[in-house]
Length: 175
Image (tube, one colour):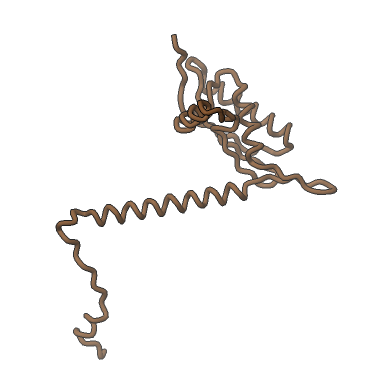
């Protein structure tokens, strides 16, 4: 039989004060907000670390060439914009920020709407685009995929393993 008495068992328990009725759940709301902020900051930190590690490398007889993901993004973005039926690249938020940047003179958006994952000599490309109304989505996206693969493989000697395309919007020309 144990020597633990009900009194010593109570002393070992942690006391959690009950929520005061006048708080109306404010503490819970604050706790939830802190948890969400912590989760978001953790994801942002992971994305930054991933971005810093994301680069391709080509080895040669007398050294190595390192290709930053931004280079691949820019080449892929230029190739995608050149396809008939593509109005713009990027999602809604990216296009709003691009508009603001253009107004202040910072209009280099050739890699907007494009992200790349590089591993050695292989690249996976993600593209978000806006197509012109009246265009066949499958035809435009297949042409974008072919142009991006051709440009990246020709200019950088990287193997493009995937080009994933998200059609975010349809542009209707003003009458």
